[in-house]
Structure formats: C-alpha cells, structure tokens
Length: 161
Image 1: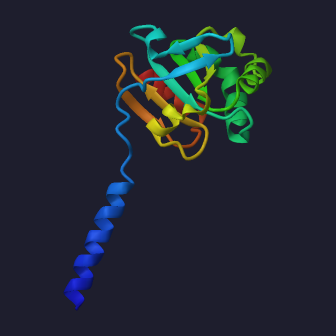
Image 2 (image 1 turned 135 degrees about the vertical axis):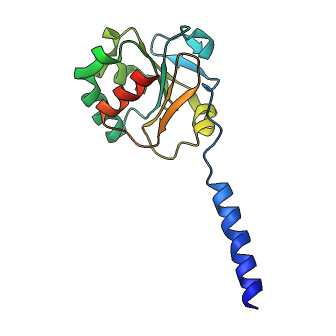
Image 3 (image 1 turned 45 degrees about the vertical axis):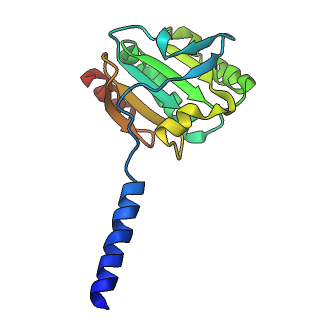
C-alpha cells in the first residue's frame, strides 16, 4: 500500500510540475495591435538589430503606473531598445495612458491594444501585470519578469541584450 501511495504521489507531482513549466517564449511573439495613433502594427514593424522589450500591461493597474513613474527619469537609458507596450483594454484607455505619461516624447515606445484576442496574454501566460519580456537584437529571449522589476535591473538586462 505504501508503494502504491508513493508511486501515485510521484505521478501527481510530475503532472503538476509539468503544468507549471514556463511557456516556450524564446522568440518575440506574433502580435497585431492597434496603437495610440490608430495604426495597426505587428512584430514585422520592429527595427532590425535592436533589443525589444515587450511589456504586457493594463492602463489602470497601479503596479504598471508605478513602473512607468519609475521608468520616466531613466528613459534616456532605455532609448536603445524598442519598447512595445501591449494591453487588452479598449483603445480609449491606451490613449489616456499614452498622454498621461508623455510617451509621445519617446519614439522607441509603442503602445497598443490587442483587444480581446488575448493572443499575447496567452503566449506569455500572463497572470499579473506588468509582465515584461526582454529580447536581444536577434529576437531571442534574454529574461522574462512576471512582476515589475526594479528599473535598474530592467536597464541592466536590456544592456546585456
């Protein structure tokens, strides 16, 4: 009986650990977003040979807003990376977010909504926002953050890319 319970617990543990493995996010996800400029863009619009930072966020998320406040004084250090901020919220919410944080000053930042397709959200299996994935200039994953990192840690990760 003890052997049976031991084997059963191994099977359950193996099944649970397999379910919690991170998704295969090694490449930049395919996305189709409506930007604050009313233009649809995809990953094909990314500039070649530049690191890419994908930030999955929600405009009304306090953690996302705090991250933006912390990033603003250091945006000069982030200008060598393409930052793509993607949300599922309606278009009018991204317009306000874009305006409130003065993101028009940063040509390397794109903000858009994927609407209710949840394609990017499913790709990363986002549980909380902000979710950040940093890719190198060849489009390979450097590091993913399931919670907002310290801005200095994010900058150091981008510099490694």
